[in-house]
Length: 228
Image 1 (cartoon, rainbow, N blue to C red):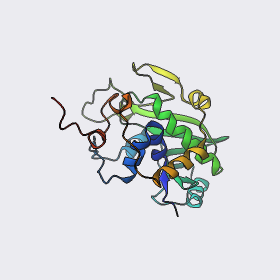
Image 2 (tube, rainbow, N blue to C red; image 1 turned 30 degrees about the vertical axis):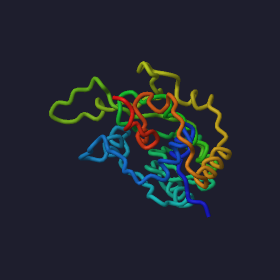
Image 3 (cartoon, rainbow, N blue to C red; image 1 turned 135 degrees about the vertical axis):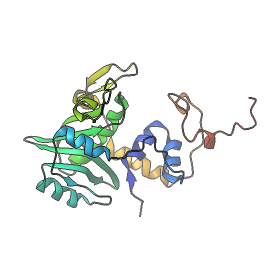
Image 4 (tube, rainbow, N blue to C red; image 1 turned 45 degrees about the vertical axis):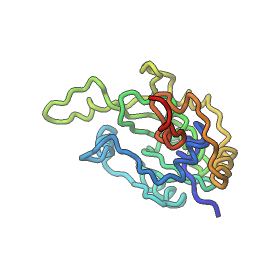
């Protein structure tokens, strides 16, 4: 029986098969860049005016999630699974013709590559009978200056566009998703096959150092004997 995989495994595979393999098999702990005294969810729920909601839990089955959605207009951390691939949608809001999915980010300029996760999540939700018809994001207002009390309505922004590399607003998120094509079944199968094989060979490309160096760079390439 194959182990369950996660949407993050699919996203890593699209970048680099060895990256996906390393993340899946590594025991290296993830580094936290933020220490939150108050859960971020409390802030963005206040921004959205959400007081009562259902909350998904780790390990929830599709049936449990569908029950939460049936009994609640708002659900946080809704868990779904399709063909052994699990995912989580941060916020789902029931609307007349489907659901609005909202993704919060702890940054001021969420980039367009985040749309890939949304697209796959949307497809997995649809496989479970949940139609997501609208996407929005929550991100930090870089111009906000806190005074005595935190003003959530000024600190956080609810928007419908990601940002490009120059930090300019890009296309509408739903327009962007509609243009994307993903063969979900094929992608899941390739990732499952990858994890049943030996570790892929390390091949150095621009992706290894673009933006910031891959966290597995030293694991893939031993440069200890190279000139300074």
